[in-house]
Length: 253
Length: 253
DNA sequence: AACCCCTGTTGATCATCATCAAACCTGATT
DNA sequence: AATCAGGTTTGATGATGATCAACAGGGGTT
Image (cartoon, rainbow over all chains, first blue to last red; front, side, top):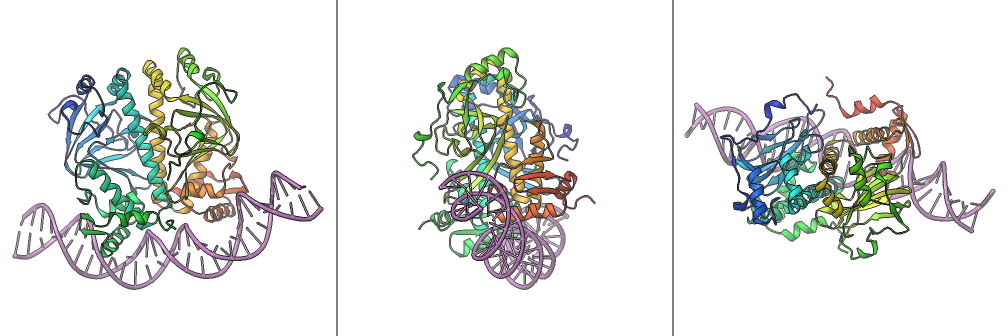
């Protein structure tokens, strides 16, 4: 089901076309968040040689389940979601990615992407051809190390989500979600207390294993309790500690 | 909470002690399932140089959350579970590992293990020191490739579990769980239709986001319906197709 | 400005699974 | 053989969140 035979149509390119351009990791302000973190100048220049960039408009796919895998991608600007379509067509969002985060590592396993990656706003990614990355990381141990750390981080992230999905109640999930977003915004120099949600209530629900109505209700409840301020997609965190307290449900004794 | 300051106590060793011994990947019958798959003889011998083995008794930990990370492990014989202890002490099982599967890749990200790994029966693992693996995989591209594939496979596995936890009902989860076990047993040369569960109902429930009573009830129901035969921990798959059908809940039209 | 569609909010009801509780089974220990 | 503990089964009840439904609000288009 996942492989729908339309792989060719969505295949991505590595050649430098009008849609892509040579990147410059050495100049990139996301350098310290992304896979290039900690690299020496000379190694950064080597990375420049293999990395290209591509703009993705809101709503467009970066890749789709079933596409042949050939590159991983670093988000440079913008916001993405990844999702899987289950055997019967129900969507499950598996992650939201912002600047500095890596997309596409699911494809290494079988050379075929297992999930879809969709831009939730106009975005730009760095295209890192996987073959070249393997080659270069044999030469540059710090790049090798960093790549492995990013793969491992993805594993840890997924396991954290498994705990969330396996053992948290609706309010805990929403609180954890908001705090996670807040932390990641802050790490990127944005306000940790005020931000726009790029995704719909339905996408949040899918990600958290809840229905959109439950997401909406819970946000309204948090708003009524003064924990957050909600205006459509605009969120203000008013009582971060209060949200944290929801996660330690009653073990404070 | 996860780091409980007892890391030293549980630190693992790489030196060849009475508890460990030099491995021989080149002789190992799990070779084709494990990270050594597809390696040339000469490369296998290089792997032999860095890999040791260790026996773990039932109930013992291979590593614990908070331990310093230094190696990944390939299960040679036996059966393991990995679990996380949430901030309030509730256990969440994140996986069950059998022969040929890799443990410990969660530690690469921060050099500290985030989960516990526990033997559910007397087991033996191959210890693959991570520093050495990095070094060797710079020399041996096929090892590098294979290692990356295993990391990616873990990501894909986790995402599959996220779909299960996020969108399946109790019966679907149990059916998927049984079929998954069945498939993996078969890949290892065991019967796919008859096996012993190494874990308790509670551990199954934790893994699947269900309570032990729900696990027990669902197994009883499947038994009553003739889909499976249940005698305590002994399971027979009587109608594999029937279990599969439960997963495609009603989209067959 | 008027319209429409998508998204979000809120209410009422229902199904699923968690919780609480009791009893049973099995294997290990004495 | 008797005892005991951990694991399992089964029943009764209840809470959480899903479902069904109606409506409201915004943003974009004409």
